[in-house]
Image 1: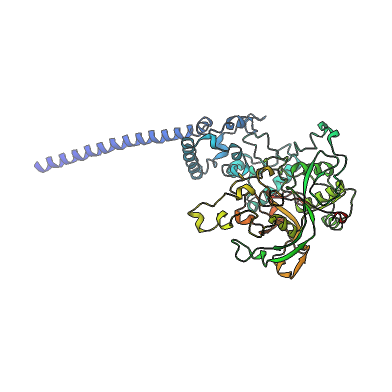
Image 2: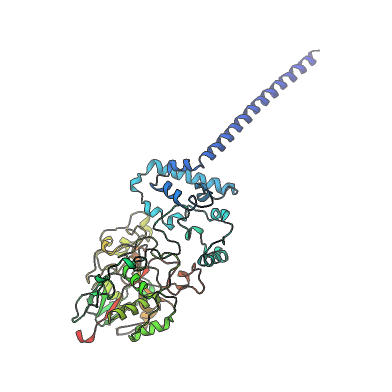
Length: 526
């Protein structure tokens, strides 16, 4: 009896324990369900447009979203914030990890940043947008790349995308930047607002110059472009001899800058600043056509100073080449070397003078401004550059260089007006930085090794690519030295151009390329 009683009591205790565990488990399950449901509801809430607006303090984000085609369209379908800014929800891990990462970053920024210090305009540009628009989200919604009503240009672009998407690493946002947030300054495949085109009828032609500036002495002059209200300054450079290339001890020098050698140059005039959008659009408006003058003809005409009555100008660019940075007096960019040569031919015909691209030697002579050091201003590249171990400990110096050069430290990621920098000793602006500048020379990495003694007015005519000089707005200080050399990358700079054949006028994959002109003086004024 005693054993049985103990067994009954033991079983009773076990039953109570099981009952207690079952109760605790039930409570746990209920609590778990409540937590999961709460998390789900929180996730749903923090995926709403209203919750996004809590932390996104961009002053125009809500208004620009409502004006975009993702909301303001004829279909009646509204695209929400998460539809564009997070990976599709069918990829659960990618969706929620991206959501957590962005959420933490947004909350932290909301709590710690002063909105007055944020460059809102910069955040509207493509370089920033591509980081926050997963391409798979675009593709999920836009299954049909060839909808009814698409233009021929759209078909070309989408075919190119469809066939080369992996190779090009191209994103939908690259062309459709204003799809989710309306931007009145963004143009997709249209040449709206180009001076001399849409507004041509409103221009008072009585203000246009009737004739070019006569040059009767070898002094600085201001060129007047007949048939336009535009003018630009030309600086007289007397030429002479100088040492071209970099010395062996110059920091960050490259092998193609050697050996230093003596060069003698004839006198020439050089433009004070890079060719501006105003001037390039005047050329475009007067010469635009679908015609094709073979590049070899244009180059030969420029070399031989042959006058040509009819000049075929650029076809419309595929997109908007100023990147939304502004036009006017900013340097014109993204045109090909051929387009720059054609511009020189047009300018020569307009003015009756011999305008052309500078030779590489002329460019370096002008950039040096009479100096023999790495820059025409005080300072060493090793103190200005971000390259090297010491930059992980100490910040690079920016004094002196920032007054003369638009580069990665002061450009705000875009080209700038000439007025933001001081001229070099010759009176030339932006010889270093802002945009790379075309020269008339073909690129030969061993060109300097083939010269001896004093080389007079050198010009390299053999090679596949063209020499570009000066660095650009995103260059490190090491790459804006007076002797630093670079060259075009023709195929790479046209990689995403969807047209077949690819454009001979505009590059699709480089932004920091432009040019300035030189003028050959009449021998009678020397």
